[in-house]
Image (cartoon, rainbow, N blue to C red; front, side, top):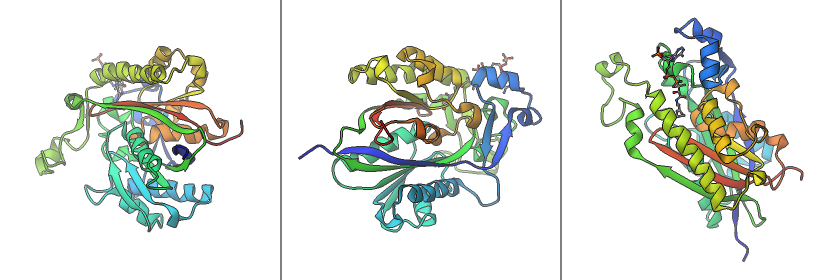
Length: 332
Ligand code: UT7
């Protein structure tokens, strides 16, 4: 029997309408377009506005569009995994809420949180359910309403993050395409540099935690930067070597969009050209679980069947990793 591979067979995204520009941020905190562009590469980001709107709303819109675009019935979906750090609620899982909002009734669903690496962790997890023959149609949602945990009086973090929702369909194939290999890593000692101090079991919400702004992102930018630059590049090079891929064999690097300088350093280490790198950080900032699928969605029409893609991410935890996949559709 031929080996079953897990292939991405469709991708979709939902972007909130509201655009928060660097100039508008300059009226909120002591910053400016020149600093933000030179230090991060970000020009603007999307923000989900509206009372009662959460991560699930962006995820559900992305899923509904994906089902329509791929001609898939909601009833056919076996599993939906939601990669997110900004669930609608502590429980139930945002994946359950998305399934309900998108009319998915026959699937089981759960959330996966690996900070900015959530999407690649979820994609690998989903691929294993496909490769074993257990399930046939799985949706991985990568969605985050980062604006819900950003302190808009903290100039060191509020310039970076944005909101977005995405949905990726995975299906089995016996062709030589799909997810070929992955390397996932984590190091919990890195948690001191990037976390949300309160709201969990360690420090439940109280008046004090709210007053101390402990429900917002806490990030020691420079420390995270150093780890991110080294580890994201190392793991991308490691997966190339493991699969005997030369720079010329890589069609696209799809990096987590945390900072343009980290993306460029990763590409340099891989010895690949800027034209081979998907970069849209200037328009969306760091959307955490949505950055990588947002890139593949934007570049979808340029992708050809058989293209070699390297996905690479680094995030809080610390968590990081790379996926090597062969794109499964498009003309070649
Ligand atoms: O996706 C999850 C993982 N996260 C990351 O990968 C993020 C990694 N870190 C970074 O991307 C960068 O560290 C930041 C973009 C967060 C910060 O850039 P940086 O070049 O590391 O700046 P810095 O923190 O070293 O700050 C340099 C200076 C400081 O002023 P002094 O102390 O030199 O006077 C900051 O106070 O820039 C100041 N600064 C700002 N100035 C204008 C910090 N934020 C701003 C700002 N506008 N928004």
